Length: 356
Image (cartoon, rainbow, N blue to C red; front, top):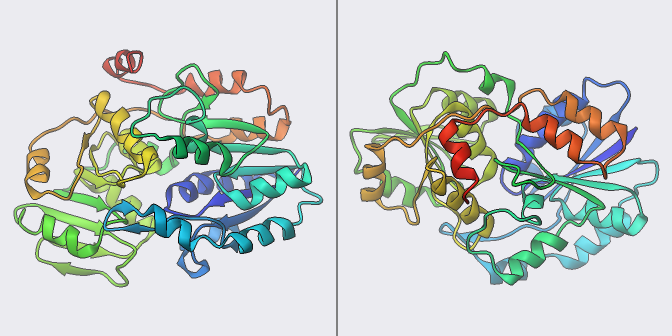
């Protein structure tokens, strides 16, 4: 089987999920997978060795300013003619399947050329009946039509009796229970400015913060805040070693925090309903707290609390790869049931899921 895997490159969550898929695909002789990334500049990708000779296009992305989605500038900077040209020029002849993680160029090209397409993404879960917060009509339209596919599996922390699978976590995170937590807080707020983060954290002088941020080029220390450039391995090591995590409302990092049992404070991107929905869901479950602004007092209060619970998510992705390669993509019930059997929730979390 020959697959084109289209991946949204805005943020790192989609790429993190694709890395796990790529590691599994690379061990299979019966499948060849090519990778297409859109949503960020070509030179802004990092630690991409697992994808071999991947390709990039401009695609469609969003513009943020000071921790908020800027809808007008997002629309203004959208290169629609280039997007349409890339859709028309993408040759899918010879591919048996377009696998898609909220990537619009490959999705629309597959639709136009009538190549089977399968979406596997957190965004796809929002096309089903799942908890949402701050979702407007425009959000619903974008979620449904941004990257349309023939078949879709959502990815979420609970199945909600829908065509949804649990997230997978890297094997090293699943096996990191013996790592002793160190007295620092990991911070990942890529949509905030480094200045605003520094101003919020510096007054908390008794706490050490490790901040990974795309604006940082070389590591440095400013008072109690240690700054690092993006690094997959460095970030994962810090994640396994830290005592707590402050992050935006992205799905993948929250999943990794849940799998490690790390206390999590989420600061969703203003104007981004998906991140607000993620924060709302985990807050309802008592699994995280929410920060709506970079407020020192609220962060200080959170540092005295502990709302962490540990959830076991699958780390072995091979059974799912088997299902993809079998080609019966309309039959999702069996694979969903099988994967959810591997998830282990604390009993109090299971009860709360049934009420949200």
